[in-house]
Amino acid sequence: MVVITEVIPTDLAMAIDEVCRKNKSGFIYSASLGVSGYAFVDFGTDFPIRDENGEECKQYIVRNVSSDNPGIVMIDDTIGTGKLAFSDGDYVVFKEIQGMTELNDNKPREIKYVSPFAFSIGEDTRKFGEYCGGGLVEQIKVPKMHNYKSLTDSLNDPYNDGKVPDPIDFSKFGRNELLHVAFCSLFQWAENNGGLPRLNDEESTTAIINLARQNYNNLKERNVNWINNASEFDEVVVGNVARWARAQVVPVNAFLGGVVAQEIVKFTGKYTPINQWLWFDFFETTSNLKDVDRNPLGCRYDDQIAIYGREIQQRFQDMNIFMIGAGALGCEFIKNFALMGISSRNGKTIVTDNDNIEVSNLNRQFLFRKNDVGQSKSQRACAAMKYMNPDFKCADLQSRVGPENEHIFDDKFWDAQDFIINAVDNVKARKYIDSQCTWHNKILIDSGTLGTKAHVQLIVPHVTSCYNDTQDPPEDSIPMCTLHNFPAMIEHCIEWGRDHFTGYFTDIIRDAHELLNDPGKFYVELKKDGNATFQLEKVLLQVK
Image 1: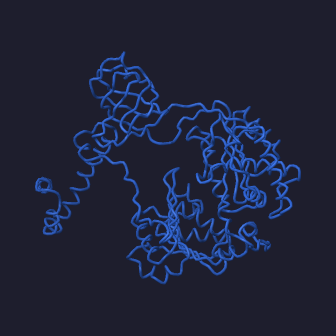
Image 2: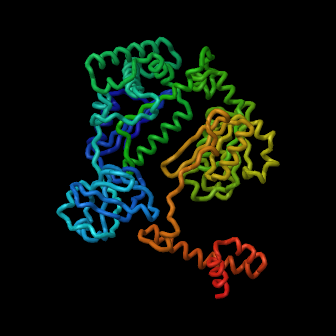
Image 3: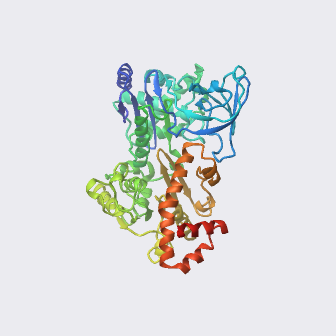
């Protein structure tokens, strides 16, 4: 794998890509350019993707298989397995089918989605035996071959096999194609002038805008397919790319770094790589900045000042932030805060986490080292940030945020904060923090991760919905009737065994302990549990 993370001469980048293609190596070319950037991925020809999404394979009980062309399979929706999680192009195998035994050949069959409880197998089942009942259908992962164009070809036509790359922002249709023209024009100008233009250099910016307009018009005149999807030529967008291309902004670097790191993982064949370009910009963050002082101060924040101005930087430095949680998300947040200069003058960032560092945390909570194990997460996170930026003002606490600690987190405390950052995985804590932010009229940023998935929610009181206004979708669960009476799938059997183990080795022992220590309380609580039959069984277990 070869990864390039800055703009280099195009001929050199194309030459490296060709060497990688010949040697079956992965190639990623990316750059963070102020508040815009790109990533290009080339994994060569016949690249096998063994697991497109990383999700666990699903299994369902078969209810019926039609004798038709193509055959339609109905799943049993009465035992709590949920709606069909298959989609077009997935592969399945059948087991224990009665009657239509031809399906039990363990042959992977590609399916097409029909309804939440049915799919077709693309095969004529009229020549098979008649379906009598039973059977399981299980999703399997089948390697799929993908081909990628070279950088040389992709610069001229960024669409791979005519497919439009996924947009990163659905509110900016046509922006991707315009950004591609802008970046290619920037490359041309940089090669002719020995590097990227100086920050906020209007002469260079004008030259790049003119070059981009010329390239844009040439593509339009030639009626090149992909340029027809581009938005109208926008001088502001192209100018912002050129004006700030040399700037390195911490949150943008963090974002693109995460994307590129994930693409490196995908070279193993797990997850679907980018196809093949990813373009992005965050120019909306600058749209309301008029007549700001962007003159540098000769400090570590000059790149941010070049984009957002001195006033915004001073507001960063005077900002008070309260962050709950110093785990994987908390480490990333506080690192960005310190390097951006937040709370580095009159402000303060307060971090609270009542947890200590464990060895298992070290693979993702990157601020911690082996000798930190056993120490407070919030304390070690603040110490690491003081090393990165000595001006960063940070205070650590080890107190839970909840009603029991309102003598610590009182009204005066909440009113002093500018932003609240949620980096906890506890729903109860999130709900409490959200209620406090609503009451004290504070902006809350809530986020969470689950493996390679993540979410973020910006909550502005009286403007957006609150965290408590929404409800997370219920997790997949197994109904107790299925667990006790119809344990037909491996998940059912595991849960059935777990339920019995808990009953015999945890619940009975706890009940016996309570009965011996306080019989009166035991029988009072017993009357609150279930019906008379359940209560009798619970007493008989203690007698035994």
